[in-house]
Image (spheres, one colour):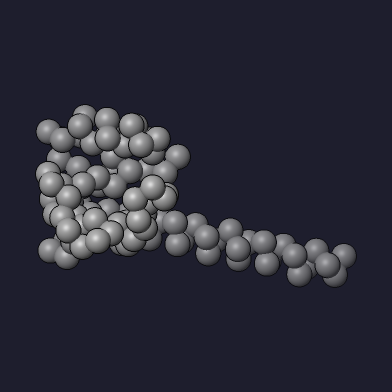
Amino acid sequence: MNRAFFLIPLTCLLIMSSGCSYLSGTPGEKPSSTSPKIVTASGQKQFWNDPGLFGAVPKSQQQAGDSVCARDGNGKAIGYHPHPKKYDGTYFPGGGYLCNMI
């Protein structure tokens, strides 16, 4: 019985802390003036350094963003930035999308 009193709060704490860190990486209403950057090299699983730098996907670009994300196996576009950087510091032409990781 004493073990349950220890494990239940610990389990709740782990679930809540992982949920908070997952939800903190969502795009804002509009893109930041700071460019997000891919933090891994090509050929590896790529991640953006700060999803919060993205803004909402413009309605006129949602379909194109969804296509890009689906091609990469990442669901649909949930964020857009007009000037994101590649891992080497150069800019992606035409903007970039933040995809939901399903």
